[in-house]
Picture 1 (cartoon, one colour):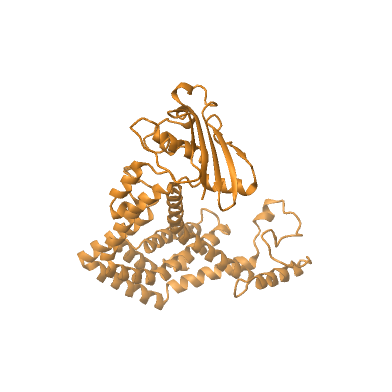
Picture 2: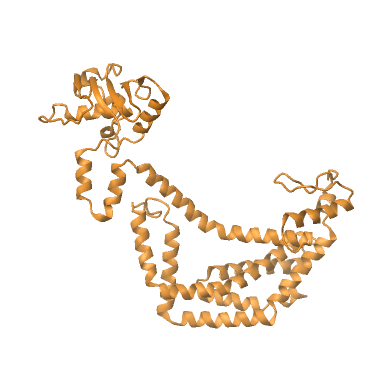
Length: 423
C-alpha cells in the first residue's frame, strides 16, 4: 500500500498548476465536466508509473504521453509538464518523493533512492490496475458470465498474460503434431545403435563396454565416460580418401541385411497375415455403416481443428475468434462422437504395430540401398527402390487411418511382399 501525502501538478493535461495536500487519506474529486477531475487521476497514475492508461489501448491511434500529456499551452515544452508526488509507504515506514517529467517519463527523480523503496515503486509501476475508468467499470458490470473472465483480465492489465497463453498454446499444438515422428526416429536410432554394437539394451554401461572392446582391438585407450562431446573415434587416424570414407564394416552390412530379411519374414508370417485379415474385416465392418463413417470423418475433422487453434483468428479468413470459446464448442461436439472415438482409438491401437513394421521394413531397405553394393541401374537396385516407395505409401495410409478404404488396401499390400524382393 502507498499513501499520497501531497501531489503537485504543473502544465499537465488540463491543469496549469495545482497542489493538493491529501495527508495520506482517502479523497474524492467532484465538479462539472471539463474541470480537470480526470487530469488529477492521470497525474497520480503518471507520477507512480510513468504512463497514462487513458492514452493507450484500443482506439487511441497515434496518441502518446509525450505529445498529448502536456497542457495545450506547453505541448512544445514537455519538460515543463511534471508531477511531484510525496507519499508514505506504511510497510517500509518510509516517505518518498517522486518527481517525473513528461520529457523523460522513464527516469523519475526518487528521493531517497533506497533499494527497498525502488523495488516497491517498481512493483507499483508494473501493476497499474489501481486506475480504472468509468467506461471499464461499466463494461465489467454489463458483461455476460461468459465474458466476465476476459473483462477481469482487462481490468487487471493481464493482456500480456493472454498473449503469452496464446503463444504457449501454439507451441503445445505444434509439439503434439511433431512429437510422433520424432519419437519414431528416436526409437529407430536406438534400435540401430543396439544392433550395430550388438548389445541387448541401450545403456551407458553397455555402450561403453561395446565401444571399449572395439577400441582395445585397435589398441586405443578406453573411454571412461559418455558425454555430449564424446567421440568414439577419438584417437583414430584422420580419414582422407573417399574410398576410406565409404568403407563400411562387413559385420554391420551383414547385420543390416539380416534385419531386413527378418522384418520381411515377419511381414510374410502367418501371424501377421492373420492379424491383417482380422483388422481388414473390422475396418470393413466399421465403415459399412454410413452414419458411423460420416461420424468418424467429422470426428477426425474436429480433432484436427483442435490442433489448429493456435492464433486469435481463423487461419483461412482471418476472422477473429475466442480460442477458449471455440475450443469448448469443439470439445462439446466431440463428446457426441464418444462411442465412435473409442472404436477408432481401439482400431488405431491395433493398426499401430503394422505401421511400425512397415516403417521398420522401409528403414531397413533404405539402409541396405545406401551401401551401394549393387550398381545403381541394376534390376535389384530398381526393385528395392520401387519397394521402398511402396512402403512409404503403405505406411502413410496405415498411420492416417482415413480414408478407411486406403487403410484396408494398405493391410492387403502388407500381406503380399513381392517375390522379387524376397529373392
